[in-house]
Amino acid sequence: MNIPQSSNPRIVIIGGGFAGISLAKKLKNKNFQVVLLDKHNYHTFQPLLYQVATGGLEAGSIAYPIRKVIQEYNDFFFRLTSVKEIDTKNQKIISEIGELTYDYLVIASGSKTNYFGNKEIERNSMAMKTIPQSLNIRSLILENFEQAVLTKDLADRNSLINFVLVGGGPTGVELAGALAEMKRAILQKDYPDLDIAKMQINLIQSGDRILNTMSEKSSVAAEKFLLDLGVTIWKNVRVTNYDGRTITTNSDLTFETATVIWTAGVQGAKIAGLDANCLIEKVDRIRVNQYNQVKGYNNIFAIGDIASMETDLYPQGHPMMAQPALQQGDLLGENLVKLRNNEQMTAFLYKDKGSMATIGRNLAVVDLPNYHFNGIFAWFVWMFVHLFSLIGFKNKAVVFLNWVYNYIRFDREGRLIIRPYKKKSFTTFTSDEV
Image 1 (tube, one colour):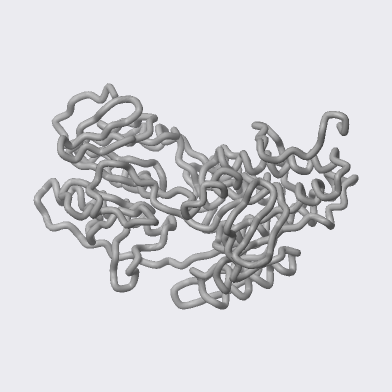
Image 2 (cartoon, one colour; image 1 turned 30 degrees about the vertical axis):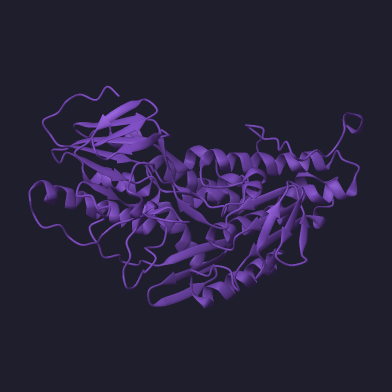
């Protein structure tokens, strides 16, 4: 990897997400040699991926170069690579570009979409965890409409403009709201030769309410907002299969659709090499103690979505969201200094700052520790928090200006098929129909 030798202890961080970047910032000029590894050369602000997927923002406005974050850090290096395995016996990681030894290892590899073992759903549906995936969704949505105006088959046309979102968490709810706003204000102008009224937006939730990690008050308000926007919500329905055309469920309910976006679950992005006792099956998270040390190892840590710190309040680990990741990364930076200096580390205590979701224009729900509210004020709070959390002044300015423009003009300028995406399993028309 061409990392120079150093007199400072070497910390290897796997992952440049919220947790990894938070830790990196805390380790600035702390007399460590730090090597940050990630398969992308940028940090992604994942809460706004759905706006990239629906044309509200361009990808560059929610991404920030990792090298720019660390460019003024001493003895700090970034390498673009994926880590394949951890060799705990020899204290080294094995990546696509070579091997590297470590004194301390921090796993902040984040999470990935959980398809619960269904390979056909994984093959035929769309995930939205990365910027490339969001761009694929944007292209597919627009390509479906372009194909819908060409096909003469009514069933094919309806399938192309029928969108099914599986999972009623914040991502599914926000994406459903964004699509509903596109239907109301944009698509009917872009495609006057289509009956946009027949466009369907179906949100499928396996439980008895959407946003089930938020308060019941917020869940009820979000459901009302979505229904008012024209979204059809199916509760207590579990998707069992999707072959690229037809969704089957645990009931007699089926859906004919060319687009399924899967937001029904996540699991840890695990890396081979750790003792099997460290991993929690099905969710692939790593068991850690109150200092984020991986159980059974003194110099290996895990933070963020990949880490499961089981407490009385969080028996299944902290929620896989940005705030726990940021707080764990921040504290671990302090604890690594203490560990090097043979001082007692500080136990992690999660400070729940609340959760929120936006449904559409002037519509959002916010849960604070002691207060819940919704509507236009919640929408402004949601915008302020997300705007403030972006990395880089330019990104903040670009996103703010986009939001102002979109609000005033009822428009989304990012309706561009920059990188075409074709689903091999669905063909809507033959050459003589074009």
